[in-house]
Length: 86
Image 1 (cartoon, rainbow, N blue to C red):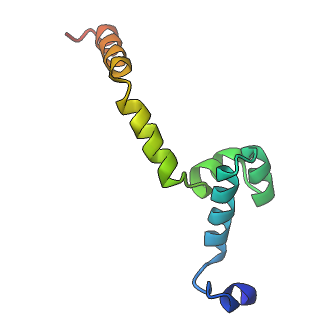
Image 2 (image 1 turned 120 degrees about the vertical axis):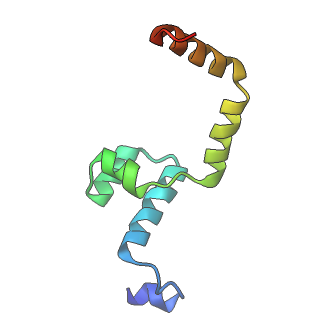
């Protein structure tokens, strides 16, 4: 960690660096399986523990869902029919 401390990132633990690597590779759209292999983990663990979606992508996902009210109504309408709700 000497190099990390010398550039003012002494607070960054090994886990922080792993999460940063996984998150940046995700942002660069590198194959998730390749990143998992680099980190020595399964794809599931890498995606669910180490990769943190960037805020902009999370906002975009919410905006897309909000822009599709018919999709929501269709989903919940079908769900009510399947569950026998009125």
